Amino acid sequence: MTRPTRPLSPHLGIYKWQLHMAMSILHRSTGVFLGLGLLAMAWWLMSIAQGPDAYSEFITYASSLFGRLVLFGFTYSLIYHFLNGLRHLLWDTGRGLDVESVRKSGMLTMLLSVLLTVAVWVYGYSVIGKF
Amino acid sequence: MRTDLGKVRGLGSAKGGTSHWWAQRVTAIGLVPLTVWFIVSLAALTGADHPTMVAWISNPFVTVLLSLFIISGFYHLKLGGQVIIEDYVHQDGVKLVSLLLLKFATLAVGLASFVALLKISFGS
Ligand code: HEM
Image 1 (cartoon, each protein chain N blue to C red):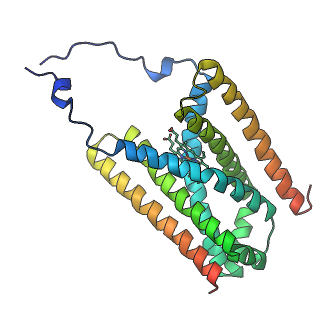
Image 2 (tube, rainbow over the protein chains, first blue to last red; image 1 turned 90 degrees about the vertical axis):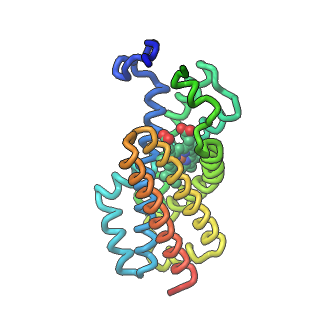
């Protein structure tokens, strides 16, 4: 049988970039990146379990410039995904779903995720007396 | 004559959509307090040496909280990853293999983390 021709939604590429769309994509990307974070956490725990030598080898990698960049990425991803996850949970209760509330909580999440990530790193560096 | 829609109407998706959705929320809610605790604790442990780490992890409260973080984290990743695979992989064979790999990988790495945690806590 022939299917009736119904209108199709336009291809993704023609949509104008908007805050909500970018934040939704970021939630998914940070979720995937945090999967790698859990892998790193497994490596961290394994190295401690294996003893001081394995642990100091882990620390050598983790404290290198590249290691710090990755750890900074994990921190930001976790904080962003956490805050945006709270928004998802709020929406699931049927609250905060109108356009204006979504925009406001979105802005707040973007701002807080950056501020909190920096705060955590400043705190971390202050613990080792480097800040 | 029946339309495609008519053929499938009432049959349902034959999948556990609701329970999957719910489990994803339960793990997310559990992860809320655990994540706050995890970030603050690790930041406070910046630069800690091996004995300090072992002493911290061996504290029973920490052992329990880390266990919960590992279990809910890996379970949440398995559920979330499944949705992503189902969104992007449409070929049945490839989809099945990807889902199996995700399942095995999250189980294996999660178990490795948990075993390492117990080994540290109870001493080698
Ligand atoms: C252990 C670290 C975490 C990992 C590896 C992780 C991973 C993921 C992944 C892969 C997804 C699927 C994304 C998608 O379908 O687009 C997801 C979704 C979700 N995550 Fe996480 N997550 C973590 C922590 C958290 C935390 C702390 C929260 C706190 C609220 C959270 C809340 C959510 C929610 C509500 C969803 C569903 C979003 C939706 O319906 O589209 N996650 N997560």
